[in-house]
Length: 364
Image 1 (cartoon, rainbow, N blue to C red):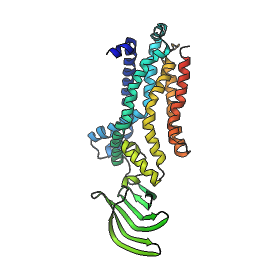
Image 2: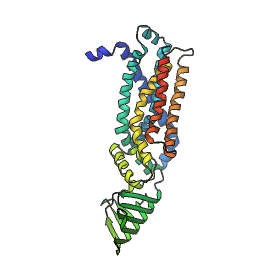
Image 3: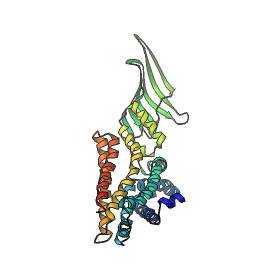
Image 4: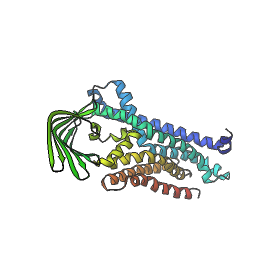
């Protein structure tokens, strides 16, 4: 308490309470808006599905609300900061603070204390909570709302340095692959090649079964053929590795995502950029709390004619530009070859520079 009394004064507590209170209120408003619009859009799908009311509320919306609040977290935080700061400026509360020998940097202190709390919550949600709630939502969507019959064609996977897998097609509904082949090499020499009409996943034994197979064993100039009707085999792959849904990575926790990235480095199935983007976003995007707080205070701390409306309008426009820049950088990473770490960092760097310039000019 002595530490808090020394560094956090009455005016700091006043701003912190306004910050967190307005932020919580804005979160509640956006939650209601999200749910109302989504219910109006998916009501027919809910009625046609066999899902119970409890499943819809606790599984679908239990994942839907955290996901979209986290997605628009920068916008919500930005609007909250601009709204209550502009209101303070309109009520001539900021002028006495700055006239009382408090610098603009000192005025920013309570904002960054409050934004640190929001940053910690955002980081915890990104790393621990959101993946689990996304798992609930994606499972519900893929079970009740989306067509579960999906097929992936021409599958090539490298299981390790010497083992390669090919399937002409894989059916995610039945977990069966067709026209399957498995090649094993010793450096550059082929040692064995297995070909089968079908491979299926045994969910009870957690193993693969191959049907109508032929194995060609190669030992220098000697070759040996082996064939059979059915055979159990253990391979370092699971049906989820062939999932073609676009929401699968957001439902992975930190350990699962890292494990997937390490396997992808060997397999090279073309999803590395998606995995790295998902991983970097969880670490980098919470820092937008500081960036947008700085911009929000710099934009709205000056009293202007027209009251709160003008700063709020400018703030909403800039927050949408921020989200748009995130989407552009993501597309350039997926389609244009931009390194994922750069694509994730660019929005914060650009808007961070804008925030510093605005903060320097704000006291003047």
